[in-house]
Image 1: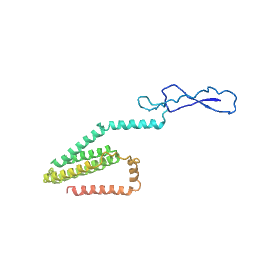
Image 2 (image 1 turned 135 degrees about the horizontal axis):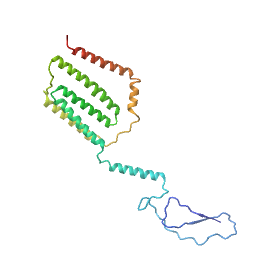
Image 3 (image 1 turned 30 degrees about the vertical axis):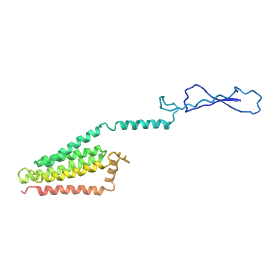
Image 4 (image 1 turned 90 degrees about the horizontal axis):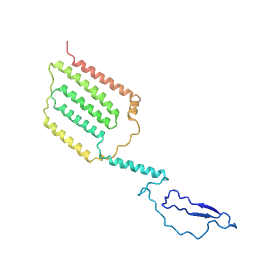
Length: 247
């Protein structure tokens, strides 16, 4: 007879005991059976609960370990959901700057100062795009709007003031009507945002959008991009021609 011991991996036992299992090798052996006696009394099974008032077993599988790690990450994410992050603070600061500069554009009587406030509002809009993980829109906002459009408007104001001979001032003739329309639009936007499922996480981007858009601009849309540049230069030259003083 050969004495075998049962190996119970994965089931922790609080008592130090081992059951001996006898397996017959040769049925016709004349030797006496080793350690053969009366059958042992059945012992009550001990239920092992991993993580309940005792450390987890060392032989826990990778699936159990990954599940525990996932539960820990989700718990930490739920605990930090109510905390104020740098992104949230930055958004509210940029939103306040955008709102203040937009009001200054409408209420400032000096037209040149209004254009400067418009540039600040456009830059703040670009920063919001950057907070939303859209660096391409941030670059376009700075280069095209805050850089190009504002520069053209400043040149137009300076040339117009030179022709007129005095500083141009803007007046808000329909301030009350404009305030009512703005309040109605603001109420509609807030009502839509309150009903929208904003708690849904944003989907992950498939790739680098900036690189893909850059390849598209210098690839299939290269001709359109160049024609747009020629159109802008033509408009600038025409504005300079009509705004120049007659000799």
